[in-house]
Length: 333
Ligand SMILES: Cc1cc2nc3c(=O)[nH]c(=O)nc-3n(C[C@H](O)[C@H](O)[C@H](O)COP(=O)(O)O)c2cc1C
Image (cartoon, rainbow, N blue to C red; front, top):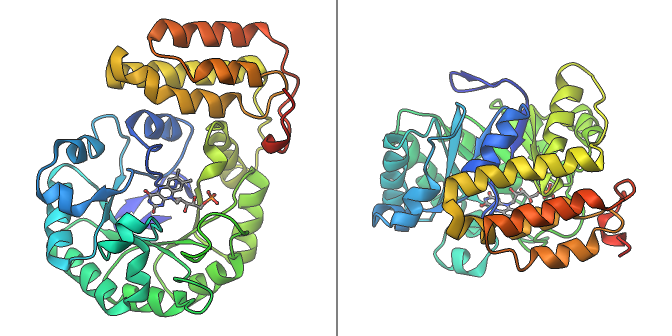
């Protein structure tokens, strides 16, 4: 599939996830075959004010190409300016966040609040398309709440502004992350526009992606919470969708090796001071769902140096965790 002039190596995207899809995470996902990765959302206001942390979020030095930078905001002029900054920083694609449900973001008329104001959403999109030479894409939810499921209006009007791709998270803003994603709505968007559409919501196994593509016709799947602690799902999904190969889950030892690789990248990228703290949640997610790993996860919460990280992973290798439980929430200590 293509976004603008870029041919993607697979129809598997890494969903933008704030606090998750940083440079090390994107690097691993692309090594496992993801066709496209996106930065965490970056505030357009902070970017035009040249906040250093926003520029760090947009550091693309470790990325395989193409890579997408996601911008958030509701002011057409500021968003256009931010898009130019992202393009100058090396973004191959600029994505607009029209789904973030967080009140702080909604108050600034960015994120999902644009779903309540399609005119403004189109002005933002038009301004950005006009400002940069790289493709602009948009990620939407299916509406603000049950009473305003305006995904077809949003998709067709945004397409007319010149965007070159759309991702649809099949929940309303009011639903946040809880009830099942509505893939019928995603299929309707696919049928209503000519640009490539990626579907997002509840993709937990490679089979989920195969079924959703078959039923909805989307051009790509976007993996979200399913890859937290399980980046191997990227590899499994890419294989199923490209060659049909069924790749088994990782053994415990292989899972620990994957966490170790991620930890090495994080320590390398952020350094020994900041890296270990950032790693806590990633290691805890990686150990989730295995019988006997609960005690280790408690230990992970106090990891504060590279040697702490090494010790947790050494200890992990010494336990017999059994196989991964299908529902991580049912983990027995
Ligand atoms: C921790 C977390 C952070 C997220 N951050 C963003 C973000 O920055 N931009 C965005 O468009 N979506 C964000 N999302 C939404 C995901 O991209 C995705 O659409 C959503 O999680 C639905 O997919 P899932 O049910 O497979 O998790 C985030 C989701 C999670 C869980």
